[in-house]
Structures are given as C-alpha cells and as structure tokens.
Image (cartoon, rainbow, N blue to C red):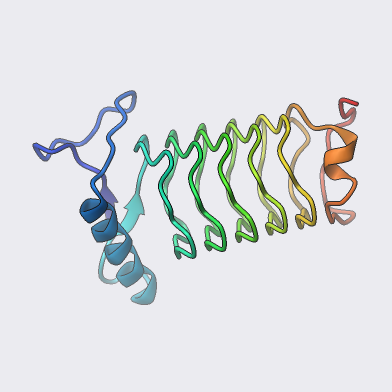
Length: 177
C-alpha cells in the first residue's frame, strides 16, 4: 500500500497541485514507511510524496528506500546521509538541495532538476539520470558506477573530473566545457 500526502481536507493532491505537508504529517509518512521497510511490505505504507512541496525541509539521515518523489519540490532540502536507494525522483526539483553522502543506488532521477545540487560523495551506482539537468551540480567524489548520464544536460568536464566511474558508467557523448 502507498501512503499519499493528502490535503488538509483529506483529498489526494492532483498531480499539478503541490501540497506542503505539516511536520506531523511528514513524520507520520516517514514512520509508516519505516514499518513498511522493516516488514518487507506486509505492514505500514510505502512513502508516496509525489508532487509534495518539501522545499527547504530536512530529511537528514532518513531511510526512504524505494519511496516515490516524482514531481516533488525539494529545492534547498537537506537530504545529507539519507538512504534513497531505489527511490523515484522523476521530474522532481532538487535545485540547490544538499545530498552529501546520500545513497542513490538504482534511483530514477529522469528529468530531475539537479541544478546547483550538492551530490558530493553520493553513491549513484546504477542510477538513471536520463534528461536530468545537472548544470552546476557538484559531483566531487560521487560514485557513478553503472549510472546512466547519457542524456543528462549541463554536465561539464570538470564536474566529472573528481567523480568515480567504471566501464559501465554511461556518459554523454559530448560534455559541455
């Protein structure tokens, strides 16, 4: 079962409508997700924060493996040390977000806005960044083993100079700069 962020009157948010959950509502989603992970989906609820407004929020050290953040506004959010492995961020805005030392293995970041985001020391192994905007994204020490960046935009050679990749890392044919 998936836990959706709901408006104050209990209606599910429309895809274009951004709902800013209260701290209590967000904590309840995190708690239900923790139970869902611990019970291997038998209890609790998978976190579904699609189209939520979490801009500026702190999810420091949160365990949100396999959570749904599609279309979510995470501008300026603190996700440092979080485990977001297998999560979906398709079309999410992570502009200026801090994702230092975050686990993003096998995460979908298709068409995500990562402009000016800090992904230093992040593990992006096997992540899909198709059509993600990586303009001015910091990737110092990021692990890109098997990541797909072929259609990511805004990547400059110096952004990748201190990132760690392997023969399975798929880079754009031509990087800007």
